[in-house]
Image (cartoon, rainbow, N blue to C red; front, side):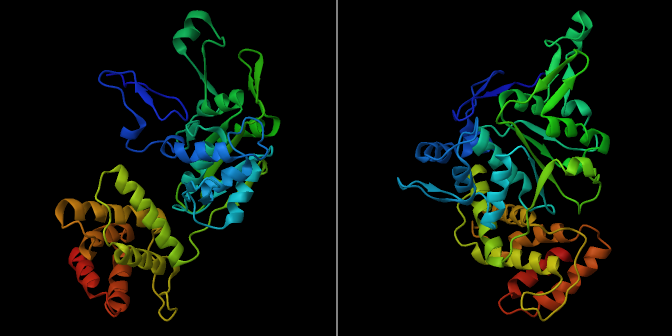
Length: 385
């Protein structure tokens, strides 16, 4: 069965489903693109933005940074922070996109690389959908171009038969392309980006032509070098990027703030009830993740073993969101230790043999002895039994 095509007009807040049934609006999308979800903020920034803008940018670099970091505009419009972290990191990332250097967002899994990439593209180009998703099976055509084989067989190579990749479309429109998980793409496919990034040109030898990028084109890639199945970038390709490392949240307070904000956003999209009093459980989840991740308790007195997983902020968000759904559908709507215990166990114990020992030791030596955590300890013991 053919899949209905969805046509989106950037910034319009409306999507039209061309398949059977009634039209779909962005308000109905489970996870709207950033340019639709935050269309009002982007419009308010554009109206208030009187600073110089690079060619084909929707906003100035100052306004892009404000969009990501948050702030209050002169007319009182509140811009919610999309990224909680060092301001300088965002400023360097935005400035990079205003030059001829591509941007590589590097960090361990769960450090908001994809989130930042999407919002940067939305603020700069008004369209975050020019995306190549990197996998071990990503072909060269996903970055360069492919062919409509019906046209190719009928008429031979022509521009009509050529199927442009998201990168090629970004080049011709002067927009921002995105490549997710660059290090998961095979090395020989990765290197197809070298000419694009250095010469701003994409040769099409079958036609004896080339596609040249127009002003405004740039590329954001995300990568991590701590996960399994990664392919190291060649030195030639790495030189084409300005690398910005996204760190894990520096303090527990910052991580709690990030988790709380994202859980609230996800809860709204999933039509879950507002979190009445989940601050304690969010802080517990964050504390557990940070201590196991760092290998030491927050007071610095007890060393603990770390499990094999990364225990990222993104995983903490997932655990709390799952707990909120449990509380809403099978509880009294209040987030309690029993609602997050199973999620924590699933996040921590990836290797049942090794991680199970780490988790049990942490429960007995840290959680059990911590004041005010008895209910949390009992809930974790119950799901671990």
